[in-house]
Length: 122
Image (cartoon, rainbow, N blue to C red; front, side):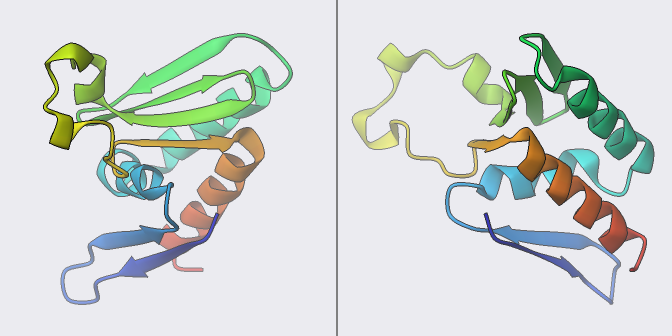
């Protein structure tokens, strides 16, 4: 998984570009995590606590939810929890790269550490 963090020097806003298939993870970082170091620490602690277990943990945000289970992290747009697949138009089926991303715990840990260093200006 490749990614690049960017900061707009004019307004201080953050932007993230992730490789194909992981776009939702970048969207989640910018929209839900932002520069909240307490949230980053909470997630990192949960990753450590859940390694090697079958327990599940969720962190729901306004637009996206992080699900940690079976050593896999899933970032999913909240609207997908309420979508009825039978009512989807064929052209609007399951292709929305910014709606769901999956990665392993180690990958998410690496991203969160890199994100924290980036927002701290390091």
